[in-house]
Length: 366
Image (cartoon, rainbow, N blue to C red; front, side, top):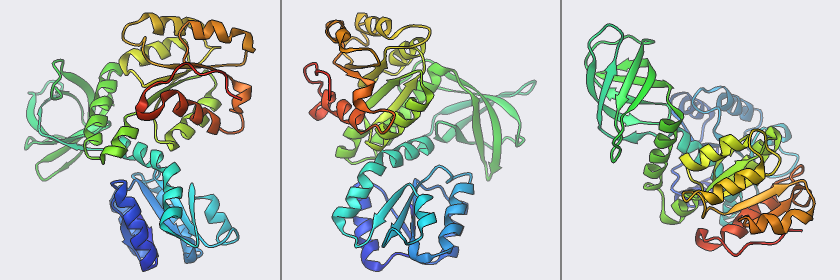
């Protein structure tokens, strides 16, 4: 992450805290240097010192306009509530002066889940595997990958292709037997290498690729970080507003979150990419929440996954839902999901327990 105009002491404190989380900072003491970096490299996060004054706006504008960095997590360093008020609001997190190692860690902790999500989204695994590029009415091109990500791959090939050309790419991941076939587009060519962007990949293959890449990324993380990163939550709710709010809160807490908007999608996701825990709304389209719960508990592949039931109904359903396999039961009103998701995150952590081991079924929270 680029950090602009940092005092030497804070830069050292910040670098140490980031390195504990397997994050390497680039410190820029001049605004032009930071703008150049944002134009040529991808970053998980960007930190801006508000003592830069109006120049903060240049950096934040560049972050939000950059194709590579517009989703990067943003931090501001501030000495008071009045300092750079407009720029504080444009940053997702704020380091408050006076700074200390403890305060830096306290600010990084809720942000780290978002940083990991950003890293996972753009993670490129360096690997050489056979790749076949299929072209319409043209001989196939056999080559090898240089790296692979969720969105595409770079391959090593000397065959002249055309930028913008539509192709199909076939490859098999290590330890997988079934080959992947992706509708793709050639997006760049440079020095014997070709950039391929996946345009269409089946849902099954997309989930497999994401899982494989997550595993490879976890191998690069410190053990204590990888343990938390491996904890996966499936959030099932037909309310788009609540899904987005709760997904953000759970991601900030360090969980990897998948979502579903109806019961049918929930069962498919749970089977394709089994989570460590499921948050299940009861009022769902296509397949109702109670039916989803019964289907999950009847399936050997998902029966041991703890399910937290979320409902707007009264407590009289609690005993029945717990008897049908729910690990915990919460009325949405008691969690205050329309205000914040802190209690929901606490409920997930309680049910998972230390080391991701589910505890005994929990009673309704207050």
